[in-house]
Image (cartoon, rainbow, N blue to C red; front, side, top):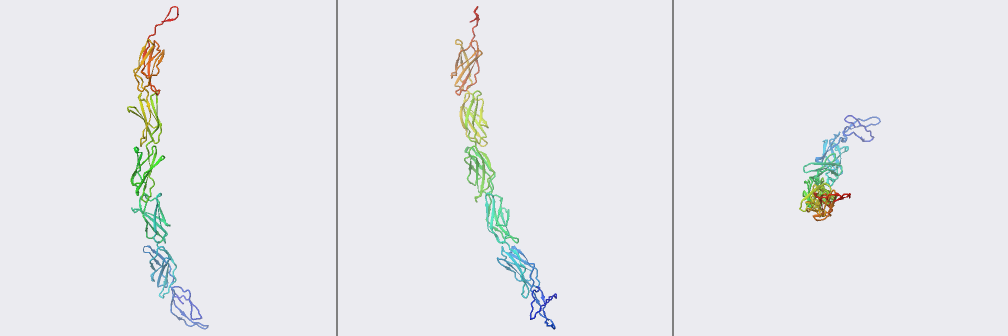
Length: 507
């Protein structure tokens, strides 16, 4: 057998046939036969020409047409071929192109999520075909994800999207989209994706698509997801001192359908029930406590925001206790003391007369002094505590009697015959007893305490200048300052003389 390029392939046979294995593919061979014996060779007889099997196609490549779910196969021409046929094989089904002289074909109805092996066969007009080409492989487009579910961790505000794994996918893209078309994609090689730090208070649509190196699947839309309501802002508190309540208000939070406010202190807590209102009243506020108030926003999915930034307030101070009033009789200064009370920033002590004249004293500590009290009055004593929010109720202490007034109108009449002086004076407000005293360089004389407005000073020394003062006192053993002095002369002493020879004075 001889090729067109005069390459010859001989075969010797004792019989009437000969085989030529491993013919070069795709060539037209001329065939000739001659007979031989030990003496001679016959002339050569030329037979019909012979076309060998077309060469196996090479250079097979595949491009996936994802949009049309097709695969476009191409290859190099094969020597000796007049037609070609390409076939794709997978566990999910096969696809074959019809015979054609073209060097490309389109495989239709490619199944999603399948691994395909493509081979091309070359044939000729004698219906002889080559062996299949070396396989070219490709992955079809992945199938669309199914069972897309979105869930939310309310505490962390992290959304998790899950789906059923799909054939042919190398990775997935989950996307959350807001009503204003802001999209947040998440790529994952597995069947879930997490979305941390979602913008608060928004309704998100959820979708997932699958991808591989060839294609993206169509998008599967899941149920929408509401993110955690936004944290309330603008929290403010006004103390309702009269009713022992605190009124809390705040601004509306996006995504919220209800709110709840809570106040916390070391002395107890108070909480408002859930409500759509932007204000609430916290009852049973304990006196003398520092409160921290936070507001939480929630939605119909029973998901709530983190607590708002704390707003603080001081409740009304507790009423002072153990109110005691004391008097310094000498200075006529009253001192009021009490037990410090929780929540107080300052105190107001008040002394009030029977005619309702009040004398207040403000103090940051637990005592107050009242100098220069009007003399001889009975004062009622009270103390209240205050802070920037409220005043406490008033605590009434024991009443206080001020120092009796200094006696006035002091006069003296000398009783020379009895060597006595009779002192009189006007009544002093607040006094229950009096005492009069006479002072001289020759001696003093004092009356005993008495409620009378007169007294007799005995043992007045003659010939002396006396100064008389009266003191007023009360049942608390507190006495006034001495009265203005009244003076008198006790009378002339008789002249002394010395008797002659006696050496003694004579009167």
